[in-house]
Image: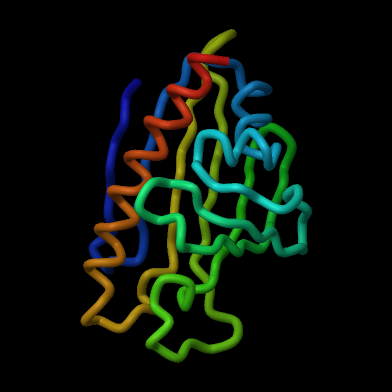
Length: 159
């Protein structure tokens, strides 16, 4: 597994690239089937990802079980792109954000062989956070995606 990390100078995004030992169709299912997503991401989701609809649930990651999950599915391009967004108030409830404020997560899949997939995970929208909190949120999300990249790789290796 090869993981890269890149943070924009303007502190608005984090990107992880991971090469997975699974074909694109298998990676796509692990990302977009809500039960499989929950298994590696460690979240219990109440229903499937549907474009234009909110998916809710609870985080099951140890130490974060008190956190709720809420995302809006933005894009499902079969075996190419999966995009969802989440409200910044989910991790910063003390700050008032506009009704349309969102942090966007994009999964882009690329076949790099019969049984290998390059998965690029990009999260953006951090400039919405107050400057005093932005670096901490960005670092936390960068670390989190490092863990999640390892989680999906391990999940695919076992399935």
